[in-house]
Length: 328
Image (cartoon, rainbow, N blue to C red; front, side, top):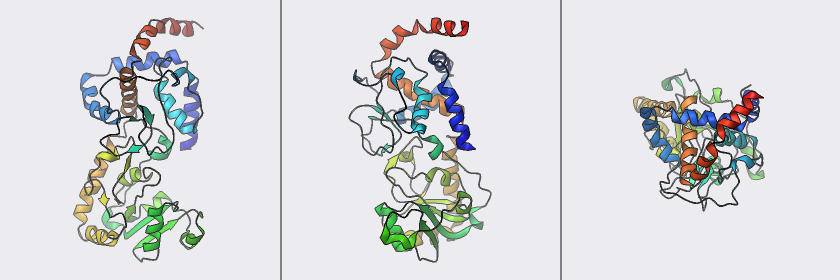
């Protein structure tokens, strides 16, 4: 039902005339209270780190030319943002799991955590997959004193985890794919999120880019355990602090049981990390502000991309376009 609602809503959104959405976004940004904009600006400047102007190639597509040549969720999520801006503006976009920093400023879902990733402009893309939070009523102290993980196991880090701990009595681990013949013994049925929430420790392992499950784990009463984070998305994984928002373990997982024993013996410290994680997650739960943030990031991109003069010249046609639409 969640996916059905998503696709239905976005299909209808795609039918709204662009001049109407352009007018709506301009009104939203113009009427944004100063104190709200100041509060959101830190996130805007994190997603779009560039502060000086840059050119956009004339070969880059215009908003009016944006077509579905990528996954549906990437198309819909980006369309919801850019369709509200002048249709002649140009932009760069890379869909999918982006692990490199583009040569020019580009809208992306993910980027490497780095001090030099300014060309990677983050938007909330593929949100239906990545932004699922949970309501967990089971307290940490009442959960199973075990670690759990499910997922595709073809990445080296995941293969290593299974080889070391698949048979450990304190771990319930398994891969849900059959891509590697030498690890078929580690293949297990999928486990629902609800069942995973019964465990004190849930492993979050990056794949090609970020780990999809980190967000819902941090909204639960279980401890998220992860090696050092290397990629980030709209969730701002690069600002998460190890052992404050999640428990960091070694890349080779050699301290996994040791960390489990420590937090099981010190539940108050585990609950402190869980509370910090909840506070972090809370800032992503306001749909209205999330939408405003997306507009602000795009607005900053278009403002710095030397598209502004073009947009200002076209704005005088906006009210006439809307009037024509309403008359029809």
